[in-house]
Amino acid sequence: MSFGFADPWHAFLPREGGHVVGFMGSGGKTSLQRAVAEVYVAEGVPTLLTNTTRCEVLPEVVSLELSALVEADPDNLPASFYVHNGEVEPGKWAGLSPQQVDDLGARFADRVLLVEVDGAAKFPLKLHRPGEPVWPARTSLALMVMGVAAVGGQAGKRVHRWGQIPFPSWDGLPDHTVLEWSHLVKLLLDDGGYLAQVPAGVPAVLALTGLEEQDDSIGLFEFVGKAMDNSALPLAMFCTQGPEGLSLRTAFAERAEDTS
Image (cartoon, rainbow, N blue to C red; front, side, top):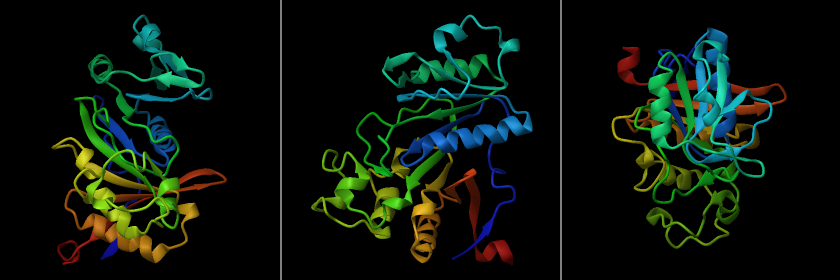
């Protein structure tokens, strides 16, 4: 399968207020969320960032507790800011409930909401437990984040909740299993995997992070081809962290009908 690249990379993002973009998975959701917010700020699209679980305190971003936001004048708010439910423990912000996010989406109908919907404890891959991701009902786009730096490492050290959450496609694998691209294909596409966590009817985009730590470009593109063979995954983002921040590209499959 051959690929083309969108120009700009963010052409697929919704610009209309009222959309809720959910960031799920592992390996760099917060960095990607902020990169998307920067695009919106540059284009003059007002945004609101939050999460539905909890996240690390981000001292460098403009933030408000939800209780304070209730009293705030919408006309005097920043173009982009983060909303949380206070510091639940040292260094951690409590997230909003899905209903609270939906309520904010209705109140700030001119803004695009960017919402982290699960956590991965800084692991590049994860297994989802029942009840997560925690999706707002208003979610209109899902960005599924996977850390490809996990390939070549031991499963017990690269997968959050390894050995704690059942995943039939990996049953019987020992902790020292060296992860291959075939393992990521199963984690992405099989029952109980990432794609299965996206609400029905919500379009999904695969976002691959940690490329700066992954030298196997042939394996990477073979993996992307297998992922995009699934009609539910028309796009794949390539996210590379460098000295100047996150570099992003978005690929689409060039199928026979696209070039005829």
